[in-house]
Image (tube, rainbow, N blue to C red; front, side, top):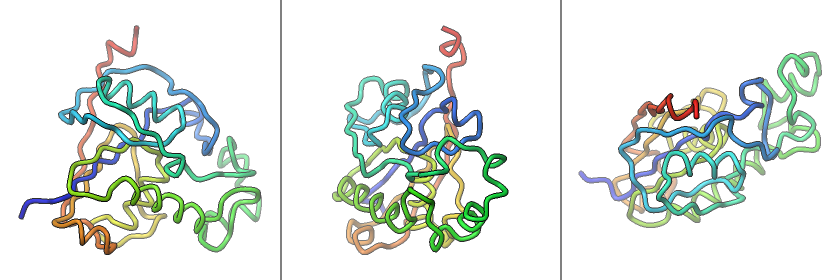
Length: 201
């Protein structure tokens, strides 16, 4: 059976904070390098977070596509943990509690997991609402959440992974399945090849 809806989820290119293994949520860092990617996808429209790193990644990967930004697709607001590393936080009790159970232990001055989930799902459903193919460039936490909710197998947010330079593709047989909250019936992952010569310019 053909799939009425196909969604391609792509994480933005790395920023300086990513390489330093810091929690980066709403801090608006640029990507480290402008790159040229070899991708079979050629969307006319790319949807994504309104933060700079997603917009810049879209310009690199899909230079001819229109980029439509949504604030609802931002990464989790990390509050007091923003721009900190695990090493800096590991001895704090509130951090350990959040790591073990993010749904019941909110980040001080940040978003609760429930707020994050409601925001992201609202943004996703506002975009993905008819029979067609979608490409989204978003954040690691956003992809992990969507995989936990819609991925082909049942898994928690903590069990999901969202790597850079990977396309996560989800498909549903009908729009009704997606609207009803069903898990995808098509799932695949594909590596994105980057033109390294472009990086050196």
